[in-house]
Image 1 (tube, rainbow, N blue to C red):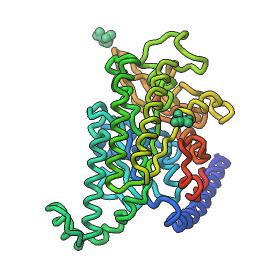
Image 2: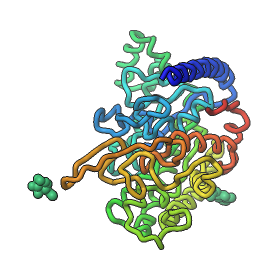
Image 3: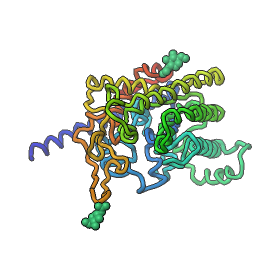
Length: 409
Ligand SMILES: *[C@@H]1O[C@H](CO)[C@@H](O)[C@H](O)[C@H]1NC(C)=O
Ligand SMILES: *[C@@H]1O[C@H](CO)[C@@H](O)[C@H](O)[C@H]1NC(C)=O
């Protein structure tokens, strides 16, 4: 016992030193990024990049606020759908920026380096599936945010309405709040990240729609994303990074929802027809973004191919240190460690039988955390791959060549 206690102490001392060093390099990075990189990020999306938005809106109703969410990195739930950091957290950290605070989070938020409009369950289509904050609502929230920031930052501007007058007088009283808001030019200089659309697929599948039926409406989903970029462009945004759809046929969620037999699976244990739906979406997205680039010529519009990245990870998972591809670390023990009725961390009695979620002993061996979302280890791997630049279409020179990206640990 004495020995393990000593090891613990040494471990935390090591971590502390590490944090101090990392803190020092953060300060350095922030000095470097001004002028060379992106001073802020505005993120739109679903649970893949929700850093606490849905929790802020519906406290005590969301799985990610309960253990074991967050256990690996934060040692407690941090309202993220993972055991640790999300890809967006690794991105901000590498760029020398703090974690993004959710737009909906009052009291403690600091938006100087951007804001996060993502909420778990959000769709692009104007429906309320799991979250009422679909992409259109997130865009409206952004416009409201920008209007209010501009009113406080530029109180002399004459073009502002009634709300702004109230804010103007409030601004003089609460001038210290200004430090928590982005500079006006940040709206132009920021990186706009958009990671949404996955729930538009599952919205159809949960209603019993076939892959072909889902493909019928996916062009509308892409049009919604393209329309959103256009609106952000006219609001001053110039740098856009858009996630494509991952191979959805490999997720424990899809494998559980869709009744199938062994013959329906490919050699990686995925449902190929459901991966094809992702490819269908991605081809349409890729083509639409090409058109948008010729329309908005003074902007950078880059697609991040999570499909190619994850397909490669699934194929070569052993080489990259992962043992399990289609099995969740946290969930009700079964073939995929996933039960549609019982979330990670929960326990439920159904027809006199108790279904209790369990958590694997080493999340680092798993790609999937809770049946839908990736582990901290997978997110770190994905971030590292992202920063090689290999999975951007077209090349994202400003991020890769000029951002002075910090190491990811
Ligand atoms: C997107 O389309 C271009 C050609 O227009 C192609 O070269 C590229 O590989 C495509 N990217 C992806 C990720 O499909
Ligand atoms: C559950 O158990 C109770 C008590 O043993 C019994 O009366 C009831 O019929 C059971 N329900 C089901 C669905 O098996």
